[in-house]
Length: 60
Image (cartoon, rainbow, N blue to C red; front, side, top):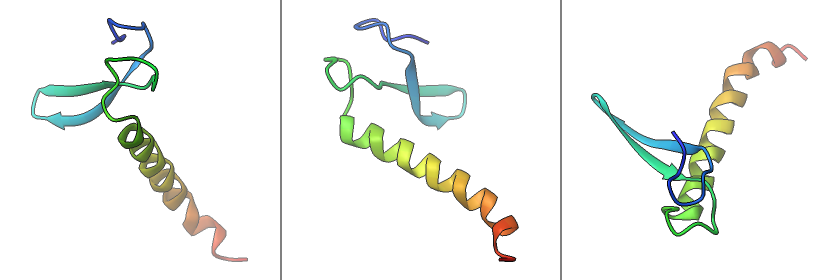
């Protein structure tokens, strides 16, 4: 799904049942909901991904 305002691919911020809450990633876009929050969500995803790869690296 693309942002109707700026055309950038939107990001899912919340998933409840069958409905998705989407936010624009473009901080300059008026449709962007809390740019800081979008960055925080991305940071959390990155942390989760790193944690998933961690067990293989503990044997050093």
